Length: 135
Image (cartoon, helix red, strand yellow):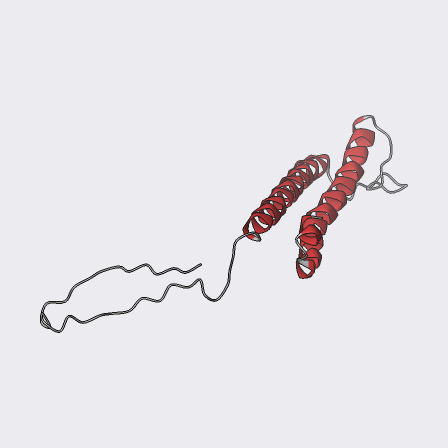
């Protein structure tokens, strides 16, 4: 909403994409984590899980289920962290942009460095600064 308030409509799709990406990965990793967590709990209690067929053959070991849970939980948490970071960054960007909108950026406000040669002391270069402003 900060981009809309600043009338920077072209930034809105970028903000939505930046926030949608970690949200997608968070939801995907969370659902996979729950899937492997359920299979792990069923296997520990001696029940059949989705990785065990009717004959009792196991396609995924118990150790693999544990490692998958750890990795998916880490990926889920990283996705959440990046989502929060991107959200805060876009708030900061919109706030700074709104603050800078009040400044005058007219073409008359410019900095043009020039070199002025002293005709008397032509061989000795001088450095100076002149500030010229009008209202």
